[in-house]
Image (cartoon, rainbow, N blue to C red):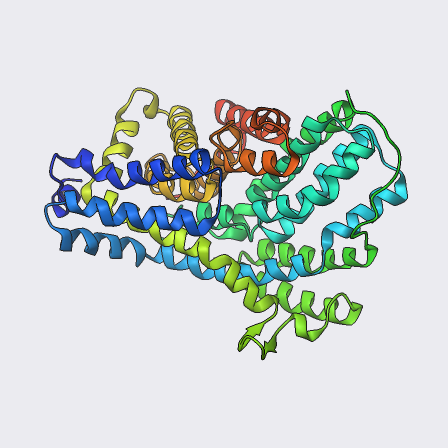
Length: 461
């Protein structure tokens, strides 16, 4: 650790190395609470501004930026960015087909109302978010379609909004094409240095997500209609049963990714199969895939928009890895890991996992519920602690992602999920947070898993 501490020094000591984190957190607070706004571009701006300003307090501005570049140039950072770019195209493909409209058609056909419709909405948004890997995108798709319908069909407004946010978080936690799944897998390495494969992580994560998902589904079904007023009627907008055929490439992509433990192959198969099915079924024409826009001198289509839409997330990832490079070369990452490992609780696997849950939760709250940022920030610390305790990388990745995407991601006035849910539903942040049942249940599931050792797998030397 001393070697890393001496590699990069700050005026005022090693504690000053956390200044980029402090500035970034302050920027998040300004953006979410002050401006009441959210976008990845702004978050990336906050990350790079934090890097620019903090370097002034380093004894060598040149060495400081060498550490930033080393963090960005790490295999983990490059892997995350490449996978995100590929995932962006597949996610855009699914969004183009209007998959949510198929679920609206099912609800209309079966005459769902009250708590049953709330539970169905949770299930539908779980599928959409798992297919697209985008929690924020799912919320913007689902709220305009499902929330007004729920108000007509006797749903409780708090639980209706919570069902949509819960479903969005479910996919963010489980989907192999989710940025948090990619980040949590890539930051946890085997003893030979290989990052945890996404397929293996998703396969091992399913039991936690399934348990929490089933419990949440039952709660929404039983209590989702309490206090609601049934007005009658159905919502016809965007109800297209043909879009359900796009579940085929989603299932194939998930199967290939988990069976082969190769996310690249899964995306390749899913992208080509989904494009073929969409074209043959008439859901879109080839112009929606890739075409020329002569009026604007630009190429268009979901392949292009998929890359464009994911670029801000890639920029955020790059800035966060730059900050991690500074913390690592200043010795702060090792210092935090050492304090946890040398603490009384850190002497046992259970105690170390509990301390890591606390660390992940605090980090997620500080960055305003931006789970990808908190996972990238705490991931290297958990990797070192877990490796020292021989905790399997799959278990570490699941603990990292599961904790970040649970209760800490839904704190009122400190959560991007809650802010967006409140803006789209018109409810207060407290009401939206209170209805996000999946976040509460998932946190309890992982807490019990840590306390009882459920799912704890050791890594062979």
